[in-house]
Image (tube, rainbow, N blue to C red; front, side):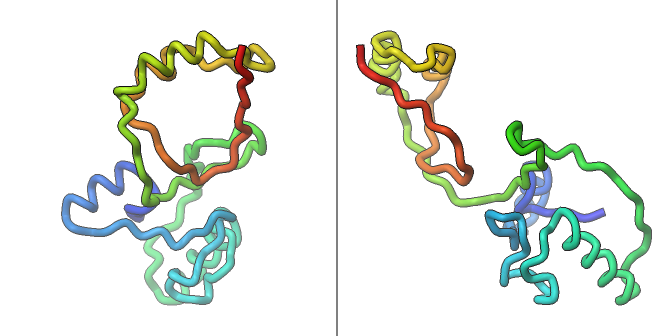
Length: 146
């Protein structure tokens, strides 16, 4: 059992309440970064050989009490069908509450190609804050004016 305040909301909330800062030594490719200790793990993919290396290290040090194979319920990327590694990152948010009415009006005056990609009005109506950056690659739908 472990806690990872840089890799999940529950662990973050639990450990930040006692002053433990989030720590996420994992890069965008899912590999251990130079912040990992020990550096023997540097560059290893965390979901396969990196996990095995940690288990072997704990075993060598006499710190592995029990090993049990457990299938995590990771969120999965719908395109690649691979697990998404949740990481705590700094983000900026914009208060868009005052733009809501104009945004909904603009949605109704937009032709989306293909039409199935049209943002439903509730997508904007229910938003108060908008993330100003994203740590994932997405296809962005480009609207054209009517």
